[in-house]
Image (cartoon, rainbow over all chains, first blue to last red; front, side):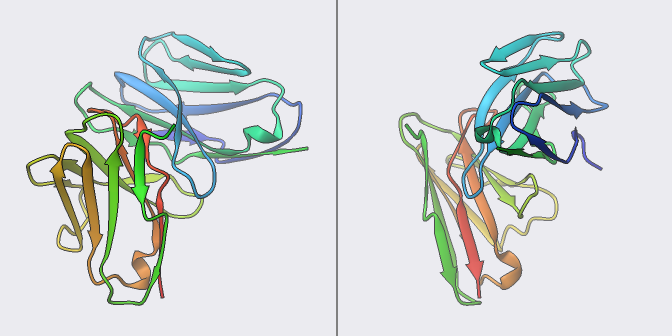
Amino acid sequence: TQLLEQSPQFLSIQEGENLTVYCNSSSVFSSLQWYRQEPGEGPVLLVTVVTGGEVKKLKRLTFQFGDARKDSSLHITAAQPGDTGLYLCAGARTSYDKVIFGPGTSLSVIP
Amino acid sequence: GAVVSQHPSRVICKSGTSVKIECRSLDFQATTMFWYRQFPKQSLMLMATSNEGSKATYEQGVEKDKFLINHASLTLSTLTVTSAHPEDSSFYICSAGGVQPQHFGDGTRLSIL
């Protein structure tokens, strides 16, 4: 059983469309992180959220941490082909706990 | 620039060969490094936590005699896949950055023929 679930698993959209990726758990996390990974490379950290209800923006990407710190979302506005990649959420239940990864959302943005 | 360097980036070798992968933190000291395994289009699965100066902590189901980890200095951890077989073919990634992984290496694509 995955401690962190992500949906959708796969997403293929046209350039310019908006999308939201979800990361859910039944457990409370002290922090959640979002990464993007391109084929053959390691994941690159996009953001860390630590406060319930927190919203962070990174250009066209908006990240939200749920009030109960059990879920998070990533919203991309006006997606571009360069956004294509595997999006991973990851979290630790306490500051000293190991980080676990969700199963990932594979995004393809078609020009 | 990269803060975690992983080497080699790709290895192709015959079954039965032992393969060593290095993970270096370039501009910081890492008492803890993490080793992950990733299959195509899947997420990262934590294999073990590498602790400088002490034994690694392995996740359930990971054979410690198969995947030898050495963390002899604050900037270097190595993963040795011993007597590799085709089922060991995968993408291996390390990370470092304190208790929670923040920086990842670029991974090592291991292909066992």
